[in-house]
Image 1 (tube, one colour):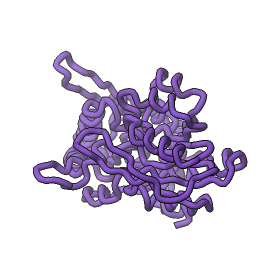
Image 2 (spheres, rainbow, N blue to C red):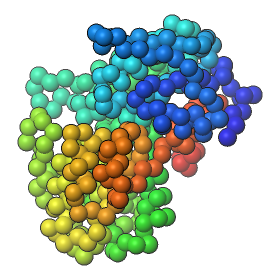
Image 3 (tube, rainbow, N blue to C red):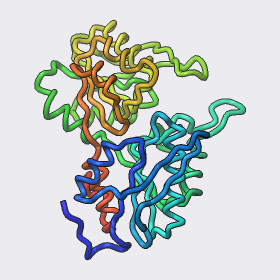
Image 4 (cartoon, rainbow, N blue to C red):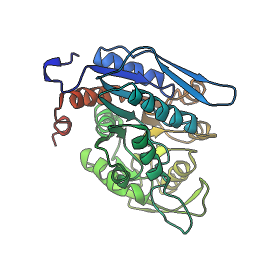
Amino acid sequence: MSIHHDLKVYGGIKLFAGTGSPELSQKIADYLSLPLSEREVIEFPNENLFIKLNGSARGQDVYVIQTTSSPVHRNLMELLIMIQTLKLDSAARITAVVPYLCYGRSDKKDQPRVPITARLVADMIEAAGADRYMTLDPHAGQIQGFFSIPGDVLTASHMLVKHINGTLRSEMENPVVVSADLGFAKKGRNYAASMDMPIAFIEKRRQGNDANAEALTLIGDVKDRDVIIVDDEVDTGGSISQAVNVVKQHGARDVYLAFFHPVLSAKGAERLANLPIKRIITTDSVPLSAEKMELLKDKITVLSVAPLLGEVICRAHEGRSVGEMFNE
């Protein structure tokens, strides 16, 4: 694709990539027919990071692409340091492109004496010098309100729906969408409406402050139906495993999983590989290692968010509407 430079408000687009998602960064650059700008990222023996730009960004419209999945704190600090480096180099505008934003689950004080770490992350991105931000499917919508700078909060649901309708729908029998928990109910309902399917919900209750939760019951009917379990992210795979077991106990036929962010920490990939599921549909917002892909190779389809992020970068640079991409 080509950039209409006559419409630009700032200097040309400069793309910088952190080390968190190199393949996705390259795909975004390829979509825009632009190179990734060269930089050095050095980790000293004391684990301190040092970043040096190998060319000037003065007066340019800069986009820093960095997901903040594992290693979370290394990737987050790298993002912050790179933003500050660009700020000190007099970049005209800096946009943090964060496909997966860490600490998304720490979005409220739901008990005494706990932090709201998602707000802290937003504050740090602003303090580092970002003028805008761009992210995909944050865990909670209120995270948008933690930022004082403008941003584009995007969803990959259109991609997943298009893939399911275009590739998998013909093989499904009486399909039903199942929201993995009540917190995802509204987005799950949007999924169901987009695919003209009924919806059911799994009600679960978190027992403590660790990653474990107990799935309690199913609200809705899945008997003799193919099931598409939807969620925003899968971490250790514990909750999604319980969801699969619940729908199977209630008579579901084939089970499909659809989620945006394949965090898959600990033994998450191994757990998914052992589940009685037919297909996993996810995105490359979080990079999957070769080992995880090998475990899931017969079940997983990874859709790239590069065209989505690349198009939004182009529109942001040219000052054009992002909403019209989704008929909004």
